[in-house]
Amino acid sequence: MKTQIKSISAESLAEAKEIIDNGGVVAIPTETVYGLGGNAFDDEAVQKIFQVKGRPNDNPLIAHVHEGYDLSKIIDYDPPYAKKLREAFLPGPLTLVYPSTGKVSPYVSCGLNTLAVRIPSHEGAQAFLREVDIPIVAPSANLSKHVSPTSAQHVKEDFDGKIPLILDGGMCEGGIESTVCDVTGEIPVILRPGLITREMIADMVGACGEYTPDFQAKEKVKSPGVLYKHYSPRCQTALYTVAQIEWAQRACAHSIADGKRVAVLAENDMLPYFKGENITLLNLGKTEREMASNLYELLREAEKVADVLIAIEPTKQEGVMVGVLNRLRKACLSVDIAH
Ligand code: TXA
Ligand code: MG
Image 1 (cartoon, protein in one colour):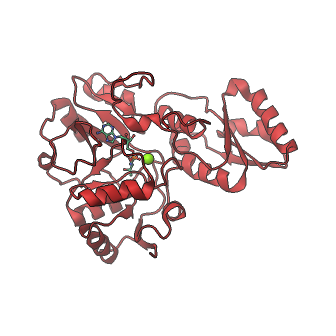
Image 2 (cartoon, rainbow, N blue to C red):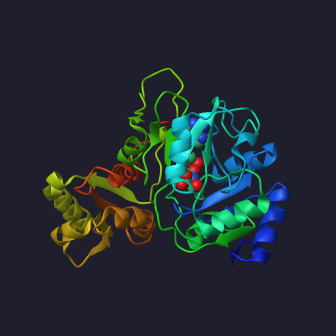
Image 3 (cartoon, helix red, strand yellow):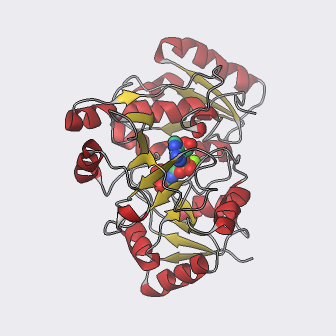
């Protein structure tokens, strides 16, 4: 199969719709990362997504709809605080998890009794979702465990020859995936941190919890995706805090002495600690928005230029940085917790 990258136009949208209507998958841009989309009502299309990605079949998918879509077609329970969150933040990088009504394919939620719904703000995503006018399930368009894609080219690196069409909507500005927030209980609970922060949600509706999975617990975890090694570049990785900077410098020196190609990923102000001829410096940036936006691009760069990636945790660890750190830590896990 030939994989085509096409910019968004009436013609490419019509082509995308035809692929979706025939049970195929299409890569689409969003304001966070690119997604691999398929018809949420079509069992085979949903299964195809899992298969193409190599995704574990216990990790549920998010249904994406356009701004004007009638949500009562897929959900019924809708607490007032969820409405408030939609009005405040959607379209945008916030996914809400509702009790499921069994309207979409059972493969979407992988046996959970909930459905995650997202209304992306990216114009190209909205145009595509309006064109198809059905819920589209779309996980990030990367091979399972690999770094999420923030450009059409990234998607091609992972799926060349495996999907027919990538709609090119340029670089994703957000850079990390949407905040996933459970709205089935009394108060919203964040399952995956992102650009819409816990503080922003609490400010809007008075309270917001945060779910931290108990890896030992027998109960079914609420958001299985949080268990996996994820977002990982295909090179050795080591993550240090700023307080461990001397260890990181030593690790660099040792790797270089071993003949390895080394890259250092750090916020702008920490890079001067790693000057050296044999080191590729990957600058995360200064502001939290910059760091979120640059993270995946730089992790993909690291695997191309280095055998060893030494990453330094940014100093600021609140707000949007909770999401950035969550991704960085998982990218640098050396063991896979779930399998
Ligand atoms: O920004 C995003 O959310 C991107 C773009 C493409 O929209 N999509 C994305 O999808 O990140 P994915 O499949 O890579 O991550 C979905 C996350 C996983 O952690 C999954 O476990 C969680 O959302 N999730 C999906 N459905 C859920 C549900 N019913 N209950 C709890 N968590 C759910
Ligand atoms: Mg993903």
